[in-house]
Length: 148
Image 1 (cartoon, rainbow, N blue to C red):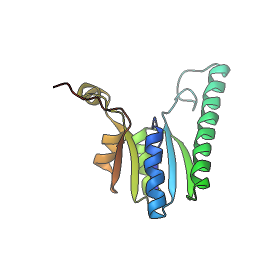
Image 2 (cartoon, helix red, strand yellow):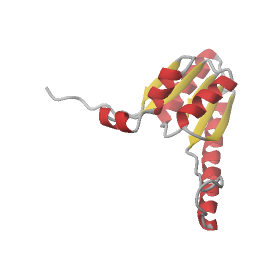
Image 3 (cartoon, one colour):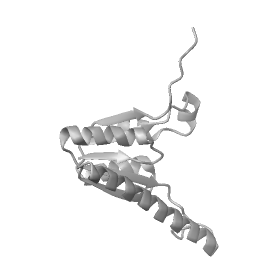
C-alpha cells in the first residue's frame, strides 16, 4: 500500500503515486493533514459562527477534492481511498502509515531554502527522518538552471 500526502502536494506527486500503483498493483491512500484549528475544536477563544462555518466548509471542500482524486485513480483501475485528518502533518502521516501498515510514503518537496527549513521545518524531511518505511520525496517546484 502507498500513502500519498496531499498537504500542499501538486499533481506531480499524484502522478508518481499513480504510476507506482499501476506498476506494482498497489493500493493508494490519499492523505490530507489539516492543521488543528483550536477555536474550531473548542480549545481557543470563542469563534463567531460564520468563522466556524467557514472552517467546516473548507473541510467539506477538501474532502470533495480528495474524493475526486480517488475517483480518478479508481477509473484507472487503482484501488484507492482517502483520509482527511486534523493534526500536525508529520505526526499524522507517520501515525496513519503505521495504522495502515503502509510500505511506501510519497510526499512532495517544495524546495524552500535552508533558512526556511531551519525556522519552519519541512514535512518531507520530518517524514523522511522518522519513518519506519521507505519514503519517496517528489520535488514539486520547477528547477532553475544556474548561469555559468
